[in-house]
Length: 154
Image 1 (cartoon, rainbow, N blue to C red):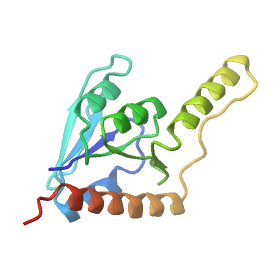
Image 2 (cartoon, rainbow, N blue to C red):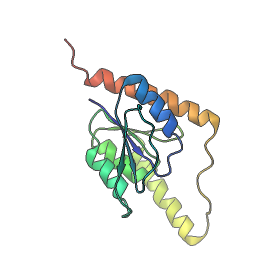
Image 3 (tube, rainbow, N blue to C red):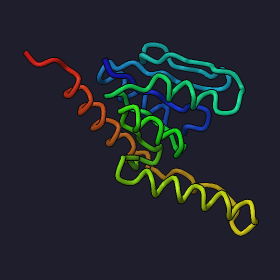
Image 4 (cartoon, rainbow, N blue to C red):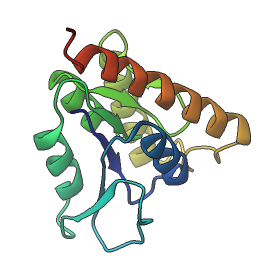
């Protein structure tokens, strides 16, 4: 059985995840550093991992399996989950895959270096309605694909 694993502390698309999970009856692990509300009847389970640096990332990477769908904006976590065989989707609906993860890691490092030097400031742009729609559509597609691939054929 596949699952959706959500890097939840800063995830702006949890409601979209719950909707897709409910549609396909797929369990969701909402992984966070602190308690948060999770709707009943959505198949979601809250996993509070504590406040240690990277605790949520470590839990998700340790539990990600082939066929699972991971929702995160964290590039190093995405790389770890791809290596485990999971599918990875950003909250803006863009897909992390094996073909681009190396470039994404390099870009992340470059931006980190530029922020340390003071050359770049600010964070990601706010999520637009079109990003939410793209996310919901792609998550739906990824879950369907994972279900097809992991369901035994007669």
